[in-house]
Length: 451
Image (cartoon, rainbow, N blue to C red; front, side):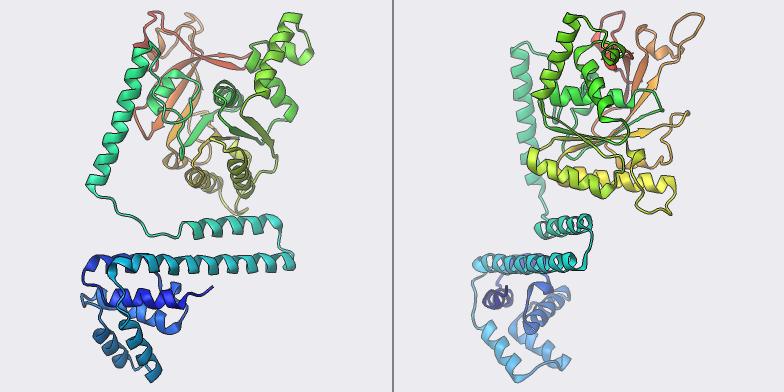
């Protein structure tokens, strides 16, 4: 697990650099812990200290520092002279740095294996071992220096991205297709796609609604669009409803038949065929259901990582986050929810998936227990019933006067990538389906407008 020869060659290269760039790169990429020999470690630390003081690290300066510190022996002085005299060409120093870093990773993996073996013998819970394993492997894999990009790098990347989007836009126009410029998976609503560009890898999306106001229906609508219509792999984590309830609801959502009639079996042959056809599409989809009524953040992470590896999921839906167990029983409600949401944002970024978390709103429309959750997410959606005047039957909110059929609004309360807006929806309660409401003027510009 040691590569002393590579360590010597790296140190020689650092001491004999004619230019600063390879020296800077070496000091940035390496840590003293990468050197297994105590002398090599001290040499690297001294080289780093010299450079930080503005002194060019050379064999002469290194020897002077060792003499002043009083920490030297004849053997060490001879070893330092031998290293300095190797004169490794600075053009090759990167090769030797990589060898030293690879040796460090092998040692870390071996240490991790010993830790797991010891934990198994000590009777540590399997879940905790897997969590430690996941964290440390991720840390080992990501143990690289942060790369600084130039304005030129960013400009080249930006021009390539914009050119790609323009080409795609023109192709859609030529084919007469509706322009839906998605960077992620579709949301299930055209207006929402326009402002979010779809649910993208790394996105944390929070969907809030009051109890009994369509959170699960909205989540199943989203899941059906992504996994059944577009066949993108999606994991739906259910913490509240029974498996039977979810299955029957999906039958209604996918067929458009009454949920009540499906539950009691009051279906004609044609209706039954439609329900079975919906289930057939579900069977050939990318939809995966996992029900866990004692869900914890650690278990959710394990499920997500497993499904990312096995099925390459693009989206994780958590229905709903308020049902998840606390990290710490002594935490306040707002602290608990804030910690859970932070964990989901990290998970989304690490796995490169979109995570959609359902939360509960108070009657005043605020997030239950944790207003600061909004700061952690990329998109914040609020599903709110529209207030209807009983006498006139019209919407009290004049923003929706052109949408007489709308019963709900989808408020895009936060959108990190673009504008916020309010989208009028129709909620068909008997079938648990959502539709975008159309304006009486039948003009697209009125739907999902910014207000």
